[in-house]
Image (cartoon, rainbow, N blue to C red; front, side):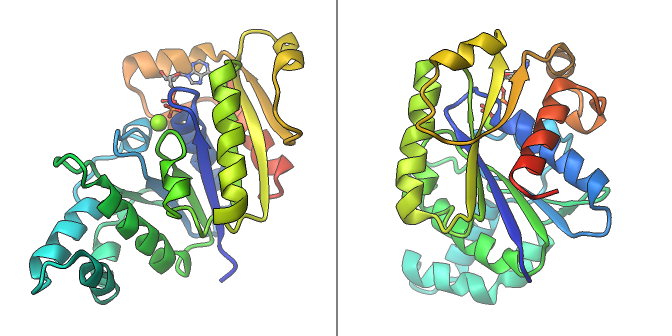
Length: 252
Ligand SMILES: Nc1ncnc2c1ncn2[C@@H]1O[C@H](COP(=O)(O)OP(=O)(O)O)[C@@H](O)[C@H]1O
Ligand SMILES: [Mg+2]
């Protein structure tokens, strides 16, 4: 299957989760016959909340089961065992109206997130053959790119606000991704711009701009009330921006 794996990456707080949720919304309405999977790959958790999903089982829960079942408790052997426990991954998918959902989970123990990242990488590999489109809401920053978790990503969507730090993180991710991610296409989404004029001051290192999104009062209101982003209006700025980005990168 020619699966399109779309990852949303960037600094914390720039709108990755809001955009990932909006993209799932757009894909579900544009491509009702396709199999779509949304993955919340952020241990800080976001996409499940944004899409109003009750998470019952996570990749980290599966990791714990597999480790408990591995005789040696050896991490390397345990990752290999995951292939045999692949049916557990399918059990962990939460079936929504029009798409499936999987959360990486939040490991309690400090320092064990790198282990779950290697599971996540394996899980993406296993699931890729079963879906047409996968949208991954990534962890903030560069870690998951560095650890090759995003290796299978075909469309790398970088998100920044107008801050210098935001554009710097975008450039760092792009630089590292060039070596470690097999992406076909990449580009940047400029989110929450105070004014369209600010783009003149932003150094994007020549990356194509996929969408420019102003502050979206309806998103702010949904966030305040904890409402499901799926129910945002089609003409909400964030939904329009998500659609524009998917069009400009050749997904829809
Ligand atoms: N265009 C926008 N207009 C208004 N609020 C926004 C916009 N984009 C994001 N936000 C708000 O900013 C905060 C961070 O967004 P979020 O999507 O969680 O970012 P990230 O996943 O990158 O940390 C949230 O409260 C979200 O509602
Ligand atoms: Mg987030």
